[in-house]
Image (cartoon, rainbow, N blue to C red; front, side, top):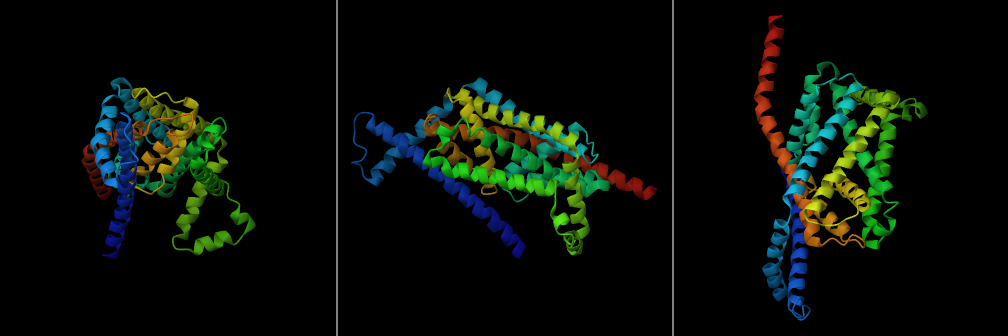
Length: 368
């Protein structure tokens, strides 16, 4: 009972934060659209009462946002949808490279299926069952002799994907320093730098280690912990990546490709609204927003991502209208949902098939 209440509370507060952030950004945009419409003929916005401003915002805000939405061109929208699929496939390729380190040569078709199903669960289960957890479950179930190593590959794939994205954002701060060094964006930049350092330190500790060399009794204490043998095997699975130089030569170009596709996906959306944003600026903004919105604050980062895009795209030198920045984020999320639906279809069609295969395997084992 307590566990159920805890899960409900965990989902409820994230949903609450999500709705609060979305309500905040929508009301700010509606007020801005209402103010512009009111001041256009030369009327005084400041002379209005709060209630009058609210009424004008509701009158002019939603129609203005809808007009902006319907102005998007179809070609770039289709391109962004394709590129969203390409980001998922780039993640599949990255995971394939990670799996090979432990000799887990799963077929490309199967890893693609699992990734699509995980994408579906990430989008629709509000964080109660993460896509990474599901990926770990599937790959562990299909690799009976290396379950621990299989689960570790999912964690490694996520760590490398996150770190490479953060690194791109930090590197692109250099040519964009004048753009994002304003006081309003320093907090965002600080969070990204802190996340990069934390992720880098974590990767070093997991892949290279060194704790047991300085503290010889560390391994002995680890073995005494509950499931200590599994924890020790997990650490050894992580160390395999640090020792494998070929792995890093193979994973770096794949990680770069994945990040480029993510940036081009958002760039295609700007083309759809005929918004001219420098690719150099987007190369810093998109990785930073994507990285922060990946934190488990709201379901799928909804609300966090929208506020960040509106905030960062309004920076001097970019000057994207708040309504367009909001729609760029929401439509980008919508393209992700389309692929989530595809992942849901894959899950429903493959679930029964996989279940039948498991029954056949169990029957064959019993007959032997």
